Image (cartoon, rainbow, N blue to C red; front, side, top):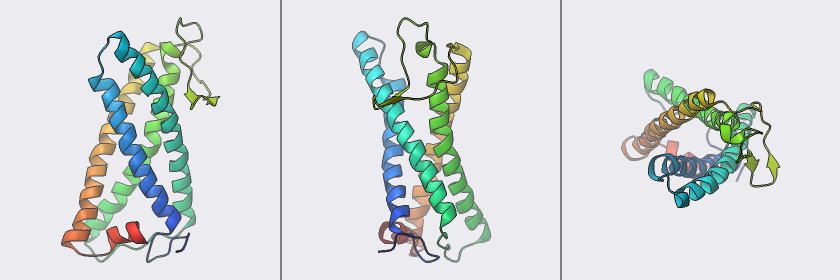
Length: 194
């Protein structure tokens, strides 16, 4: 079992990063939507939202670090070739992967900046919510004073990047299933078994 990729298959590290990030992203998007769309505004919900937000921020940091590792690993290794397919399908595959990587970076960066700009993170706020990663260390704070407009703007970027990621992921999953069940090629098998 090779660690490095080849032009025929993905190495075990690329596969591990792929599947760990897939689970992490699905979990982050699910928790994020639950926090924003489902939880109410009563005191119990606010306490749960606070706890989930802190956990969400921590796992968002992990997702960002893994995305950087994944991008670095992809640049340092060959990418397995795609099977024979139309030029537009290959372009869509490359564009979809590029869009996934952009979203994997845009989501944690916009989330961090949104939390940093939040009035709840303001040094003068009654309730100061620091950007902690699993309670171990604090993220740098580029916005020492809270700004509701900036928070709303960054929140919109974060939300729409999450929605774009969901749509792109659905397309990615659909394409993988098409390759496996319709085209009967090795695209999905290479990401599962190498």
